[in-house]
Structure formats: C-alpha cells, structure tokens
Length: 640
Image (cartoon, rainbow, N blue to C red; front, side, top):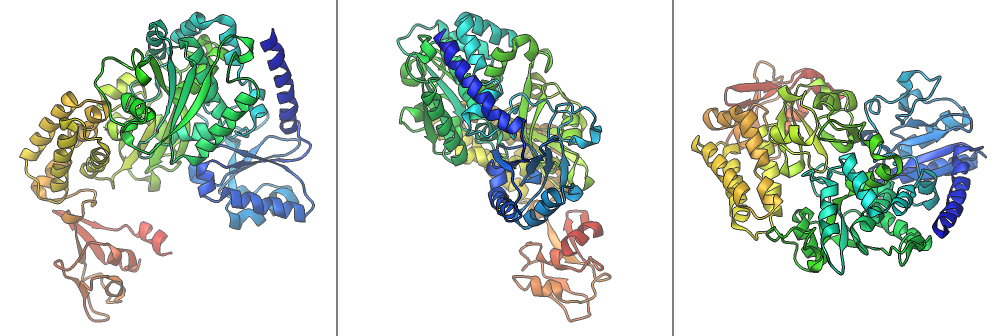
C-alpha cells in the first residue's frame, strides 16, 4: 500500500508536468539533441531560435529530446502549435535558424522546403497520409516509443508515459509470474545471438548463491551501429526499469551498466536518471517498501570490441584485462566474481518494461513464429534515408531498404546488405526478400547482431568489404587464443594480397580453410564469427575474388593497385587543370593539346578525375579489361 501511495503521488506530479506540454498554450519546440543532432549543430540552432523569439517578443516552450530517427536530416526541429500536432523540419542548421523563425513563428506558416512531416506512427484523423514521413510508415516504435518525444533528463516525462508501471506490476504478481510472462512473450536477446531471455533468467534464478548480479551490456562497438547509444540518450529510464524488473526476477541486489566511455552523453543521461531513481525511492534498500533492494553502478569501458563478449566484459568489471574465458560455466551459473550473473543488451531490457506493462499477448502480435517483437536497426551506407529505425521482426529486407530507407543513393543498383557488424555477413541483392529474423539471417550466412545494417551498392567491392571488416576484428582480437590471434592475421594478409593484385587461386582455398579453423577453434564469439564476412562474400561473390586474382581487375574500381588512370586524347582539350591538380606531377602535355598520365609516377589519388571539366570528362579509369568514365550527371553535382 505504501508503494502504491508513493507512486500515485509521483504519477500525479508527472501528469501536471506533462500537461504543460500536452495542453500547451504556447508553441512547443522539440530539439533533437542526441549525439547526431549535436554533431550537426542542433544546440547552436536552438540558441539562435531562442534569441530571435525573444527579440521578436514571441514565446515558446523548448524541450531537448533524443534521436527522432532520420539522422540524415539533422538538425531536426519539431514544432507543436498550441492548437495543432507536432510537425518536423530539417535540416535546420544555424544558418537557417533566422529564416525558420520568420516562416514558422512570425508568418505562422509552413516552410515547405524544410518540411519533413509528422514524425509519428500514430494516426492523426483528418490529415492526409502524405503528412506522415514515409520513413516511419512501416515502423513500429516500441523500444523507441519515447525517443524524440520526451526530455530524457526529466523523470516526470518518463512517468507520464507509463514509466515504472511495468516494475510495479512485477512487484504485484511476483518473480515467478514475471518469468512466465517473459517466456510467453518470446523475447530473445537483442545483443546478437538471440538466446531466449527467460531461459537465461531461469538459470540464474535457480542457481543458489548468496549474491547475484545483473549487467546491462551497452558496449556497442560495431562499425555503423548506434542503436543502444540512441536509446540510452533518448530514454534511459526504460532501460533502467528493465534492469529493476530483471534484477527482481533473478534475485540480484546489484546491477551494472557497462557503457563505453566514447558515449559521454549516454553516460551523463544515465547518471542523471540513476540519481533520480535514488531520489524517488526506486533504487536502494527496500524499494517502495517491497523488501526488494537494488543498486546500479555505471562501469565505463575503454572501447575494446572484445568486451562486448560476456566473459571479457565481466573480466573488465572485475578490474582485469578484458579477455574471454572458456565456457562452461556460463555467466548465469558463475559470472561476476564467481556469482550467478545475467547479462542483457540495452534493447532487450528496454523491451522488458513494455512486456510487463502491456502484456505478452500484446507483444507477440509483432514479429513471426520464432522471432517475436520488433528490432531497432542503424541504417547506414549507400541509402537515401540513413538513421535509426524500428521494425517488426520478419519484415523483408527489401521493405527495409526501399520503403523505410527510401532506396539506394543516386538510384544505383543495390549489391548487398551487411548485417551483424564485423561478426555478420553480406546478403546479396537476389535475397532481398529474406525475412529479417534470427534463423533466416543465420541460414543466409549472416547474423542479426545488435542491429547494424549497412547497404552496399554497385560501387562497393565485396573483397574490399571483407578485408575491411576482417581488419577490424583482427585489430580488436585480444590475442588470448591462437586461432583468432594468428588466424585472422593470416586471413587479412591473404585478402590484402588479393586486393593488391598479387593473389592466386589457391588463396581462396586457404581463406576457406583458415575460416573454418578459426570458427571451430576460437575461444569466444569474436573469433568464432570473425570469418563470417569473408565466408559470406565467398559464398555469394566468389566471382569478384576470381576477377581480382585472374583478371587483375576490380569491377567496383575500389582496389587502388588494380586501377590505372588515363586521359582520352579525343576528349582532352588541354585545359591543364589535371596537371595543375596532380600532387606528384605525373601529368604532362602542352596547353590546348591532349595530356598524358605517367603510370609509373601516378599515385592513383583521383585528383585529375575530380577536376576534369564536365564538358570534357576526359579522364577515365581502367581495371583489367574494364573501363569507367565518370557519368556526366555525377560530375555536374561535384563541379556545379
């Protein structure tokens, strides 16, 4: 009863606080102030808008929110009139701020050129569908439900959205019922492997020990991935509430958030949220007079990719070098300081509070038979709409790329989609109807991973892509086990040799043999999955490896040693621009006469290609038997 009375007072206060936004008499200006927005100048834009409004005796309420999703359009400013719905504009850079104020606040109109639309998946009756941004149409924002809509540093904003009601339900129904609800929901770990969440909790719950621990793994290290960071920056309490529920269920008294130090804004907002929880009796001894005690500590990681692996992460928290250990025993049986430990990804925990609040029956309406719920992805690469998205599991890759992502940049042909980061693989264009779920991606030679999704087009070399990801995992190997330490270096050496035109056909067999040895012999998940990018590209793009080796050509014109630059004498007007731009003086020729590139001196920097006037387009590249002139339409974009 004391818990209910305490929370009721907090909820009443939260409604009062939120009503200032919901029933606003002044326009509300939401500023996307996550890392992506700040990097694009959001805070500078906000300051200019505030000063201009004061100068013009106009007033508004400002709310700094998390990532709204379409990072390519940052800085994003959302304006909610006192009698209307919030409309997004972007990019609104500092140099656009004055015109933004004039059009939106002084003229009380709409700036159509900067109009993004309604950044919501909700239905707004009376509005044409076109006003909803197409990037959000296929999305279901569950994990991201509050990102971009609430102030992540305002405790009452989270409460007003139903915050901590999932935890209250957990206290009401008991740990056994919580475990059953999580089992019924089908929630699987969102960190990569997709292990059933309830099973991991069950192992730790059933293990007898005087102390148990819960760890939130926020060591997001995949290149191109920023899902966890965005959730922590935009809605930290959703993750912390999930930790409370998980800790209560397994019988833990202490939790850790292991977050890399390169995420300073996420860490700052976590620190603020944790302090708020202590102030309002949601952390500490005898929480809400329930008999349950729980504390949360933030552990800053030094940025080692291997520390995303559970046992290496545990070693790091214990003050040791982040290196994995053999399993079993698994952490749920013997983890941190030898005690039962459950380690969950940020997104997994953010789902927990929703499942308790809305019920497993609600949750399972999303996804397919084996992969329930939604999944956040960081869309990046050669795609028109980059950013943070959340989609139901089971949706086809094609729909993610062309409906959510808007298709390929410059309307080029999609070649592949890389999922799962350095531990994942490349899925070719002919498999774009593949459903995005754990089993389908694994069968295709990739993995779900934490949610990185990089789109590749015809200008990407798949051998070079494999080399890039293997160079990352090789550099991040802790060196403890020989297969990973020596094997990844040997594979990288072979790939570098192939990319430089010095490969031989036996290298393909060597890569496959090494890959299987590393997968079977490595100690941890980093080594076991490191060969995936190589194996998947060999599986679907073997012809590109063979072209590099046999024909000494790179069809994407990416691998420098296989490319040479030339000047077409029939197109060259002798303007001398290429000769002036060449940093090594490899181009010779008289004015108004065709010029020539000395292949022995040329360093393949491409400066001559960039400066050659549009009307001539005389510089071209050759790779084996392939010749490529840069399309005129692209050159116009670069030269104006």
